[in-house]
Image 1 (cartoon, rainbow, N blue to C red):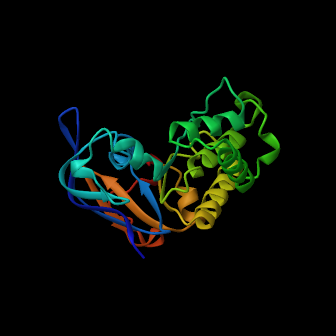
Image 2 (cartoon, one colour; image 1 turned 60 degrees about the vertical axis):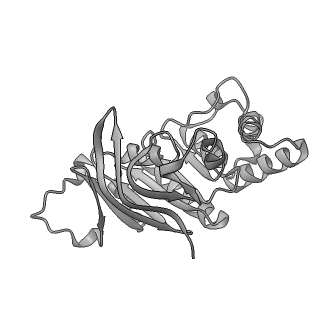
Length: 239
């Protein structure tokens, strides 16, 4: 097994302020990790650093063989071809069909062969169970279906890593569970590692994985969700 993410003694700054410090984080092939923490704790800053929107200001880091400390602007599109991103608010292009959304991303990430593009778009829609919705407009889909399209989009380039930023945040509990099952299944199918930032502790309890808590500018591995010391400051409702 190889490391998809490696950060040692890392620090992340945003607008000059230190958001996270002393980051020690490794992610292996095919691993699933939850990132939990209150709003503003730095979860999104970590994800943005991993996909190249923020710089790693201290320490060393590598994502899928890209050196985060030496990442140049021209490297970022290539880095993002190795990463799939699923957002809370779907971020689909509303002026085109589901299939055209996928073709747009393929074209933007360097694909040119129309047959290969059509085949890959069809494949990922099949993976998420939406092959029958290829010609639908995003507004005609339910929230759960839109998130399925977002997951399909994240899978287009066979990413080594999927970043899911609150992917169930806008969904009802039943749909959230469906999306979690799908995300786990397709990650296994595509052999992708996953980092999922979430406030939804019910998902963490139902679908066990590694858990990393972001709190007070630090990242700390939580060994067992069921063995929290009730006298330590941990408010699941506030996550």
